[in-house]
Length: 56
Image 1 (tube, helix red, strand yellow):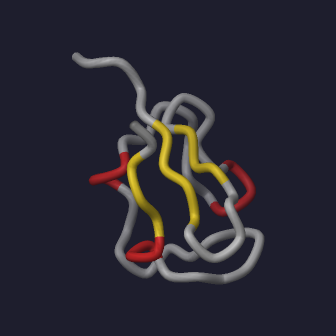
Image 2 (cartoon, rainbow, N blue to C red; image 1 turned 90 degrees about the vertical axis):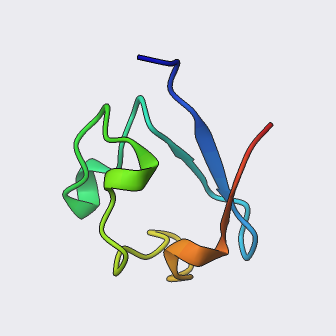
């Protein structure tokens, strides 16, 4: 499997790191971006998942 990726919120610059997940929101470490529910929101600003972009 490929290396873990990171995605940043275009609203507040929060970074979702697949390796770390978002345990406070019930997203376990190692959870791939495509496996996060569509109704998940940024834990910092509440922006929808669609506001996140892959960090190159």
